[in-house]
Image (cartoon, rainbow, N blue to C red; front, side, top):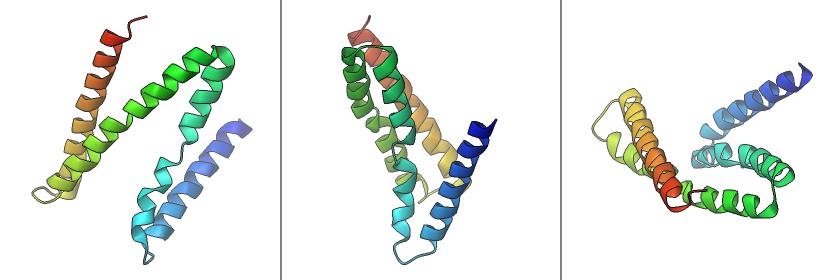
Length: 114
């Protein structure tokens, strides 16, 4: 239970940090905060301790390719905000991310079938 509370506090602190940064002269830095590799650290530790180094290397390479759906999200949001209300633009951008992530997983599975 304490671990869950600790994780919730960290999440709350990150949200507060994003809120504070968004009000500063350098507001764009708020976009960097959520990209801190918290979950990547956890995933890499788990794969690295429960599997072998080759599995960890494969996970790292897949992680490099996983940047593509995020770029699709950012690019689509950039264009959608010019023609849609923000909530709809965000939903549409998440849909684009989902399609790009599905395509990435499908292609990866096809070419790297275990």
